[in-house]
Length: 125
Image (cartoon, rainbow, N blue to C red; front, side, top):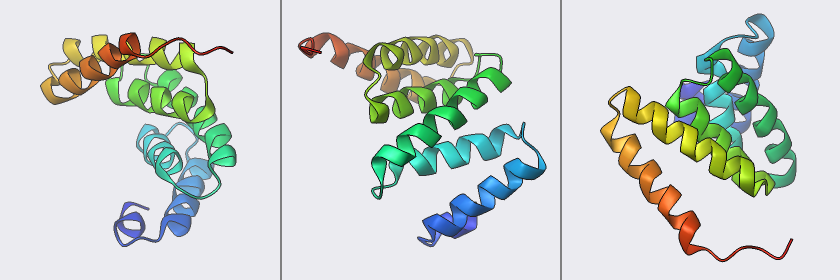
């Protein structure tokens, strides 16, 4: 799947990751790769958000809510799906996991993202 994505064959890459998950439903690498593909795909964002949320939540559960990348993926899927509070919660958990595992680049990126939430005005929803 990753090779297909690298040459711009996103649909084929997604199909490859889905097949990998059909064969091994608990494959965290396949869950993460499919999730990132879905949240970054420009086509059909509403459908992608629904699938991305399911995939990201499975990745988070499969990693015991301790994997910074899976939590960051969930935050991205929540952003795509308009789930603001779950997005903020996921970024907060991802930041803690990134700090705990010494991921300095991810920690800095997530800290900036968390700060940006404070700069945004509350929505009127």
